[in-house]
Length: 84
Image (cartoon, rainbow, N blue to C red; front, top):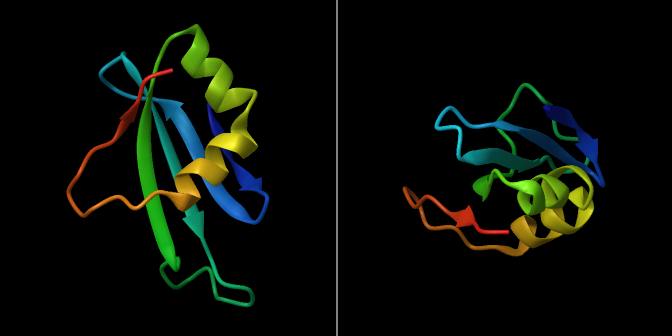
């Protein structure tokens, strides 16, 4: 299952990752009135374990996961996997 839409003011994409073990989850934030032709104010990606709990977190509790990712500080070149 894939997700590609705006939720709670964030651009969100989610899809099964190529390793078959995780779900790619990306959250982007654009400032109010900002052109979509410019890069977002911030862009954060995490991976979620691809199991029943992970799928439920990504596809049923999406808003909660978005807010969690929005509050995270993810250093550059660091890959974060959330185990659900």
